[in-house]
Image (tube, rainbow, N blue to C red):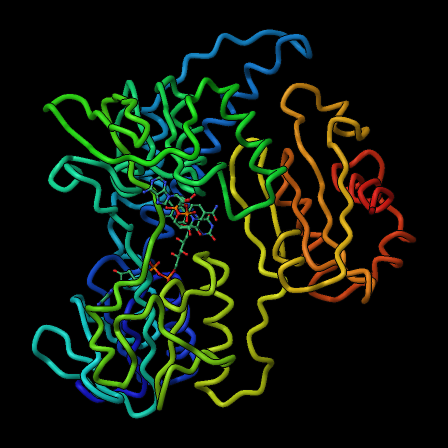
Length: 451
Ligand SMILES: Cc1cc2nc3c(=O)[nH]c(=O)nc-3n(C[C@H](O)[C@H](O)[C@H](O)COP(=O)(O)OP(=O)(O)OC[C@H]3O[C@@H](n4cnc5c(N)ncnc54)[C@H](O)[C@@H]3O)c2cc1C
Ligand SMILES: NC(=O)c1ccc[n+]([C@@H]2O[C@H](COP(=O)([O-])OP(=O)(O)OC[C@H]3O[C@@H](n4cnc5c(N)ncnc54)[C@H](O)[C@@H]3O)[C@@H](O)[C@H]2O)c1
């Protein structure tokens, strides 16, 4: 069948959701993927990395027992982590279940790399498929590999090799102190790997609040991670056993493995975008509030440049499905975009940072409280480092952003995401009750410290 109602190019997080929901609605749907149905998140991203983090955090918690409730001798072992990633998370990188779920709904699946071939048309391996109603581009992104002298051709890791490794290396340099760098750096350190993180910006997690960066920096240093911020690699060498990175100050770092984690970007050049009037030299596919990218054309997920997160792709998928089916619904709204970096402590954030709010010309006031001074933080003991930071637009009496760096910080942030999204007045937040002694009760204290 080369004519269908809808073609979904890229069956990752966003594409798979759209394909299944349109098939459920009775449309003839063709799904195309050159890799695994499900995409980066279940096979090399969110899910396996969070399994690694769960294991690493249990090791850290076991060590925290001393002085609180006993003593545990911990022997980290990577084998069960690697085994769980194979058996539970990825089915040994086999997408049979996902493909069958889609075809079981009546969808048609073609494995291959596709590209647009004009409005309503997608070409895969020389065959052109036509969609009468919709083409959706959901092709995600790929790791950025910086043009550092000597790097190309060395056996460096991206997230894929780091997730698939069957052993924790003896030593690891992580290039990039963003989400992947700090999460996986902490994991491997807790399994005994000597980790060095090299971050080009002046602090780890440079997109988040500086207070959060400092807490994560401190926590990683306590895990014995060497942290080089404001440092750029100018040369990479591999001697068959070890990598040596030369930094711009002339110093060197050496390790068995090198993980490149300096960001991901859409592969715009490979998608045939010029055939539908979209500039392939851009960073992302421009979309409107209903995810439309052109005539009968939609785009979702990482390829749209609205935040590289699974929940963004899923949210956009819901908007797209509604629009294709002609159902009413609000356009996309990114005011309350949440993100969580799953270090220990976690960094949960929503909406604007203080700097973003100031740059937007808002009348900004900020409230900060320290988690260790809260009742729950004090009870928690070792590992309780953290803050709640609130960014208020005083003209409107509204919370426009918040960060919770704390144990389970992502969960506590959830309450603040509701406040940002629903525009709960700060005065109302001050007057409500906060259960004692919870982590989220620290929000009340942060509200008291708004200056
Ligand atoms: C290590 C890591 C950890 C992460 N952790 C989290 C997390 O905890 N929380 C979170 O929210 N996000 C996390 N992310 C980000 C998340 O994985 C992505 O935002 C999400 O997968 C994006 O979904 P997508 O549908 O846009 O693209 P993808 O999931 O990347 O899927 C794109 C699909 O398109 C296919 N494709 C690409 N080009 C073509 C083509 N030309 N033809 C056919 N098929 C094609 C690919 O094979 C792939 O299956 C993490 C990412 C990484 C790398
Ligand atoms: N918990 C989560 O939600 C989660 C976890 C992992 C990844 N992700 C997603 O995956 C995407 C990719 O993750 P990532 O960590 O690769 O990207 P990132 O954008 O989060 O971080 C990249 C870091 O590398 C630094 N950098 C850039 N070029 C450099 C260079 N040449 N030398 C040294 N440092 C350099 C940047 O300053 C930045 O801090 C992210 O955008 C994120 O949204 C999300």
